[in-house]
Amino acid sequence: MNQIVLAVISALVIIAGIEALKLNRRKMGALILTGIAFIYIGFTPTEFPEVVFESLHAIAFLLIAYYGLTVDKNLIWIGLVLHALWDAGHLYYQVDYPPQGYEVFCIEVDLILAIYFYIRMKR
Picture (cartoon, rainbow, N blue to C red):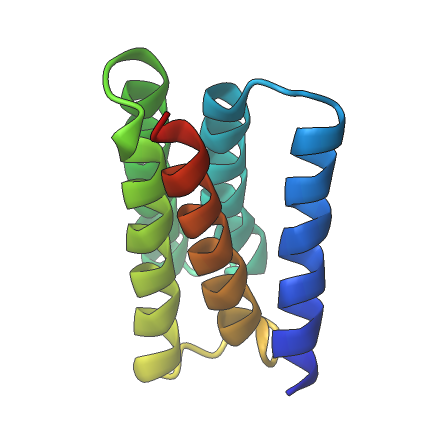
């Protein structure tokens, strides 16, 4: 439960910062999508398969963010939804290297930000 509350607060702080500072939403969305993808690499043990697996995931989301920035802004919110599914996969398969509750936290943040970017970049 605490992860959900913390996730909602975190997402709202990110949104408030973007709005208050009048930051470019498309650029911020791409930066956020890239950053959240690379966090999992820091959680991985030093075993080869996990590092490669998470690195490939991070590169895939980096490319989604890049094309969201340069080609189609919809890829930003779509990438965030896909990242929430990625987090759910870690939870479903009980991957043991992320910190306890991280997946739930990240799913919530991803989905709240996906909704925000969908609504705000639709214009």
